[in-house]
Amino acid sequence: MTIANEQDVQGLLRVGAIVAEARDVMGASVRPGVTTGELDAIGRAILDRHGARSAPQLAYGFPGTTCISVNDEVAHGIPSPRRCLLEGDLVNIDVSAELDGYWADTGASFAVGEVNAEAALLLRATRQALEDALAVTSAGQPLRQIGRAVERRARRAGLHVVRDLCGHGVGRHIHEAPNVPNVESAGGRTQLWEGLVMTIEPFLTTRAQTVVEDADGWTLRTPDGSRGAQFEHTMIVTRGYPLIVTPWTAATEAA
View 1: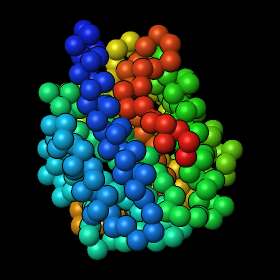
View 2: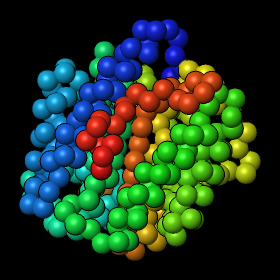
View 3: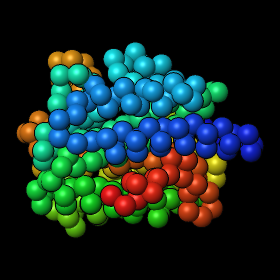
């Protein structure tokens, strides 16, 4: 989607605030003993209260309201009342929704209780990879710089980028053009333009660069059992720093 007027901006900010609220309230509820089904119910209640609809359910018939992925599950994990979080786990919460014809998408990864040094590094570096990518995102700049920034951060941390998952355009549907790779494409000539609505969502892991699909037809996990993390914002490209549609709340900023 490309912004046409102020109505578009306000519509995106409204739905973005809702998914950001759900992401952060769910994240604040992460603790040993909670189930992913309970977390999903929290997200569902927030979307329902605002009159928003779950994007993965609406667009694809996903079996949960939100996607909740644990440890080596990198994306699209199905919430379950039987999946109990354990001390030391990593959990990714991905929330996307539609309201009044506008769509927004966001995600964050959280530590469950105390995690080991490797997991803590993975969380820090993945969030920093998103920040690094945002810093090079402005109208007229090449799209490939986003992937370059993510790859550089991963290398510095001794981590790996999942090459077959990427960000995407968004706004009038959950997945739109262009794809926003997390690795640099030497031949990529696309330039970012003012008003483009898109997500940036680096996926970093301790070892893997690819994912495989589970038998459930949804869950994407690393083939070697290595753990992953993801952080994601929806944004509007400007001539300067992008306008973040799904900003962190004070609670998440302190994490």
